[in-house]
Length: 133
Image (cartoon, rainbow, N blue to C red):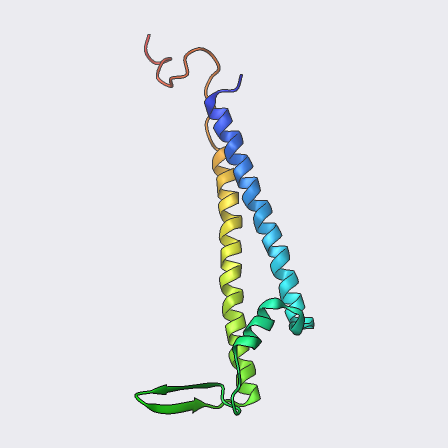
């Protein structure tokens, strides 16, 4: 029968492998979404949602009122493209950081599990029992 240390090692290796697979699947999904955004942005649901939420009333990008005075921010099409591009790069950075953290934690868990010392088999599993005689 395996010692409790071996069972913990197998569990940690399995957990690390699950994190690696999860990171790989997320990376593939993320790559597919980026490819879709580049090739067919109107087919991506998040882009559809953003475009539905952002409305251009009379050509204004942002409009509202402050202290009873109305204001409008009008941007050219190239400026709107730049703003959306900047927001897309920001989201790209956040998501890639999350994926990187998942993959690196899986690798570190596997490294830690493989570096665990093994206990000798027998009835007494204490480390100091061979020192006391």
